Length: 334
Image 1: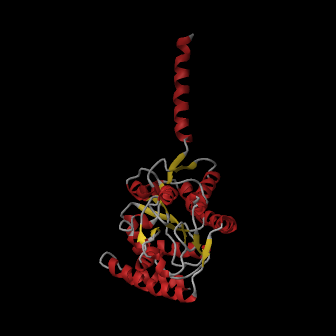
Image 2: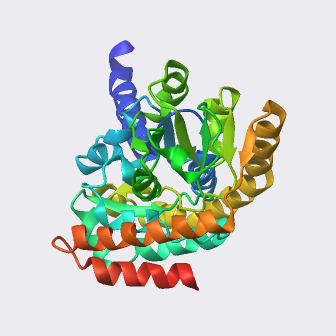
Image 3: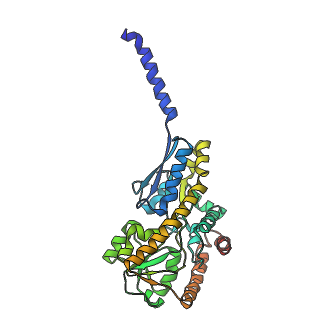
């Protein structure tokens, strides 16, 4: 009797094995860092949307620091260590020089939804696409951020001259201006900002509202600027191009077709929750709020002009920097 059932049992096992192969979901690894916060809500949302649209057949598995260091995410994307990642262009501007154009101080205080559209248009520029292609990367969606401001534990800032000697952690465009005032650019990983401020490695950090809330730097700060208006960081979400091209059509449509909804969710969440929470936190903590005068703002804008010219000059040997700058400047000025 047992002998008679062996072929049936074997056939059943083989059938089950192949059925499992057919039904196995496609899973992408996503490399982020820190912890879940306003800065990552569009990634969380697109993962939710993709899984729902494909009924669980395509999943994005998000890791906060478990796959790579934040400054190595672009490298990981290039050789397929994971399929999706977020990074900030100022982490390694020589690796992605073209998208640093959006970090230049354009002195424009725009809505998050407008910034998102500007960044997306820049990502689609052929000069930028070619630059990121060197890393086998396709820019999927931006992470629009409000204008950066500064929180510092140093003595009160009474004039622009007080920036001299101040060790600041911040993105390229902002630091290009502040360095002209004597500030010292000091690079530390995001996860070490609070520790670095506590220990005195840095005196100040320049962030959009979500980051002081995540790092709790406002708890050790003495003052915060309100209208620095020298730009913000560009921290795109990218995908490995080969992985994107190998997706089943339905999966690819679910991913690309969810970008707009994920971005709308991100913008609303940031506007409705994060900015207001940040403003309440610095007020409750008793930080002195530093608002630059019209004269000081004029000087900052004058210094910004030299930063923009320097960017064009230093990048012109590698790509048509003037053309990309003009394209971007037009987007910001509309």
